[in-house]
Length: 229
Image (cartoon, rainbow, N blue to C red; front, top):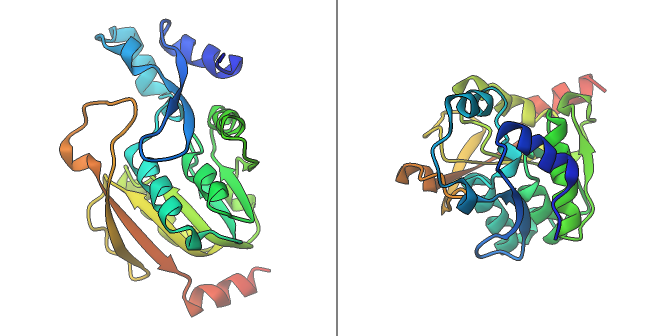
């Protein structure tokens, strides 16, 4: 199986010997095009490190939070079954693809990075599902039943997005292993999940413990949504 040319070229510009390979995700029915971790078992040069930090190919990894959320939706499809879903900061598209597999009526993979959108397309094809695509969350209408969010809160500067998710969806499911116990009146932690990033980045053990938060739009949010129609 040959990796999508546009994604392979982009990865090669960052890491000349990096290869994308189809990887079966453990404890799921899903596959993703991911960076070949076996081929990357070496030290990066200073120039490679600079390029990776400047423009990280995050779409070529399956982060622990995304994997945990995908498994959760497979186990509890009632969260998405027959619903309109948006996968925010979709990256590889793993959560959105899992939502389609679990019976979602429609799934929009949303990411600012055109390469992430290309990865979502390639991974949707790999899993034989259909997604819609968006590069601007705020251009979307307030029409979604559920907003899925995985591994977006790695930076506390992103915490204000917690309010924004509910401007476009009735509910939100947020999976994260980086920010511990954030306090928000609408979000409650409902599960602790276990997963790891693929390929294995030898991350600290704490990053394998994924918190799953749920929020439902309040009456105040509903009134604000109506006023903006």
